[in-house]
Every structure is written in structure tokens, then in C-alpha cells.
Length: 348
Ligand code: UDP
Image (cartoon, rainbow, N blue to C red; front, top):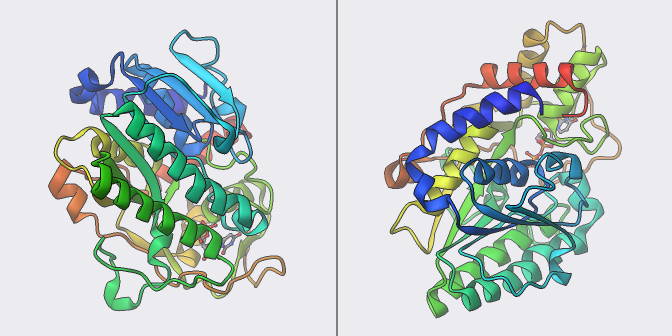
């Protein structure tokens, strides 16, 4: 395993040690467990001695992310789509992360994206109910807010969204919104102990192993382009903003959200609230990597900028109040780690 990931996992284990009793020996089902966030989640579970069932069909994740866990007694990898997955095992916790999350990919596979979020979530909620789980974590997204107006930035959980149900991002946005509605309904009908995270842009080692391809997300693509001295491809004018959270901060937040008592039936933003334009992000990456890349402001022919949110930034005060969430890693530090990781091991 890459030494940056090892160091980060050690740090996460240390920072979450107060929760170890709630994890050790418990049975966790993690869908999408071979994906970027799923595999980090599985690693932390493993470090605390949980029993992990990881379901993934490797459509957008990678076996490489979890291959170091294969063969361990406490790790069970099931190569299956969620809709075909069946299990008689009784789980203590269900963590539902399976979904395509990269815009060009969900635009390419719209029906699968809707199915996994709507039918997949319904199926897992039934399982959660049958198993009487202690907690059900659903990975939702800032995309449920769509394109918020300036007076809703930073965005609180109480904002209902400005979302297009009939446009290029609808399959992801509306899939996640319907899944949230299922979670809400199971909580209010059956008291299923759901907790929802609305995740903003997250980055770190293992983000998109296809980072070299045109499917890559902006941050990881820019790091790749900067390291290789090729032009940084900005879509549109580069004035659109995002807020980038380093993976360890995100994972720590998710564990606290799932395991803090008394917050069933609640939804939380988890992310980093430093808002930055995509152009500034590109400039920062060029500087940090001491790259010779030029920054190319151009609309890419294969990418649909319609409904691309102009601004995105979370208000994380609710998570801070309810479970002490506070990101630790600043953007420059996180970017240096990602760049070092990529240089050492091209396929992070
Ligand atoms: N973007 C870009 N160049 C790229 C890829 C993405 O300028 O090569 C832009 C994209 O249009 C969006 C922002 O960067 O405004 C963040 O894109 P990302 O792929 O991270 O996904 P999103 O935050 O839109 O879900």
C-alpha cells in the first residue's frame, strides 16, 4: 500500500479511537466498498477489527482498492450488482455508497444511476428493517441542492434545492433525492435508523483510478495534467466554484455521523467550507506541483455544461454542533499529498 495512504489510515485510526468499541467485532455491509470512499471506509473498519461484507460490481470502483483486504478472515468481497445481491447474514450496520458519482459517467449510464439509487436504496432499507440494524448510512450528495442562488451559499441542509428533473444531471440529482425520500419514509414509517450525509467534492488517493481519462473529476485530472505538463482543461469560464474536502476529513465525518447516538432520521452536510473557483484550483495545482502546464479556458466538446452548478459550498455547522465535525486538512496540504501519491504510484 502507498505510504501516504498508510499514514492517513494511521491518523484516522488515532482520531476515531473513541469509537472503537462501536466498531470492533460488528458486522458491516458496505455497498460500493471498492470505490474511492467505500474502500477508505472498509480500511478504517478493518483497522478496528470489524467484520466487513463489501458488495461492488466494479463498474466505477476498482478491485485494486481492496486487494490488500482480500483473503482476510474479516473481509468478504462480493462481486455483484446491488440489485442482484442477496444475503442471509444479519448485519449490525449498513453503509450505502454504491453509485456512479462522476458527471460524465452518470450522464453515460443514466438508467443504471437511477436504478442503483432508487431501487437499490429501497432494497437495502428493507434489509435494514429485516435485520433491525443499529444504523443505516446513506451517501447522498450536494447535487440535491442543484444550482443554489448566491444567498444560499454556504448551503444549509434546510435549503430545498433548485434542481432540474429533466436535464443532463437529472439521473444523479433526482436519483439521490428519491433515495433520500425513501430514507425519510422508512424512518417515519418503520423507525429504520437512517442517517444521511450530503457529500460535497472529496479528493484524495484512490480518487478515480481512471484519472488519466476524460471521465476523471476536475481536481484529480488537473493534478494529472500538471504532473505531465499537458494543458489544464477548464470547462467554461472557470468562475464556477467548488469546495474540496480531503478524504480523511470526509471519512472521519462519516464514522461520527453513523456512530454518534441520538441523530437517527437526520441529514448532514459533510465537507470542507473553503470555496474556490475552478480557475483558482487549477492555478494552485500548477503552483504546488511546479508545473509548466498552461491553463486552457475552453469548453470541451464532449461535456454538457448545462446545469453545471455555478457555486457549491457547504454550511457544516449542523455536523459541527451534533458530532463535533471539523475538517483538519487544508487544500494545499491535501493537494501535495495527492500529487506525491500520484508521482510515486501513477495508478492511485
Ligand atoms: N471541470 C473542468 N475541467 C475538467 C473537469 C471538470 O473545468 O476537466 C469543471 C466542471 O465543469 C465543474 C467543476 O470542474 O464545474 C467540478 O467538476 P467535477 O468533475 O469535480 O464534478 P462536479 O463537482 O461538477 O460534480
